[in-house]
Image 1: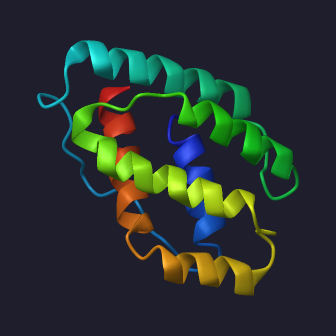
Image 2 (image 1 turned 120 degrees about the horizontal axis):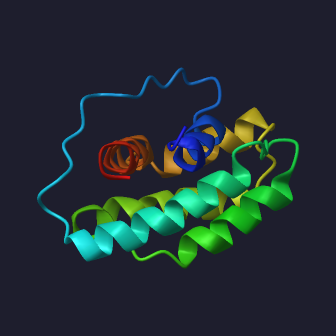
Length: 128
């Protein structure tokens, strides 16, 4: 599923929060086709590489995915949300995601993260 990378972050960030995700997203029209195509190609490469890896049991994979995600240039229409997604990944890479207190602290520090993850996920789902 193309939402894997975003989904992993959501799952790790919102463990035990019961996040439900797929609202009908928009997509199309706003982003330049070149920027969207390049972003999607990079995102899909990352997704393929990490689709069978669990960041809870393999935190090095989360760091590697983060490094690759930093290299992507998101389309303007999701740039702010994508920055929030990266911030969420940054914070997750620095904690033990099995530690519920640490996860709760990150969640509390990034209240906009869930919406950002969903927005980026909806964009990927619609455009990639």
